[in-house]
Image (cartoon, rainbow, N blue to C red; front, side):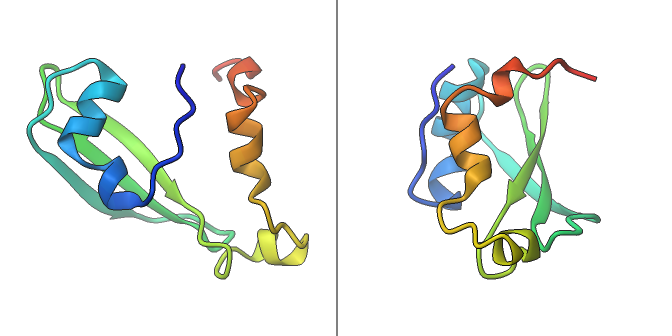
Length: 94
């Protein structure tokens, strides 16, 4: 799987991007804030209009708001590094 970093949320949530990532036809995308994100991260439900409709969870981790990143002096966003290097791919789905 491609481990592309995007310039921002707008680029990531563009229908063209999600269509490329999911392999499904996507012409519209909606996001709804979700409860949770206890570390200071923000969670959003992302819904696409494909057939079948896609439902995803987006975790937005702003470094200045995430207390775990602040407390552990995480200047490089370790969670992203773990994902980019494929470590998260090795976890079994629960």
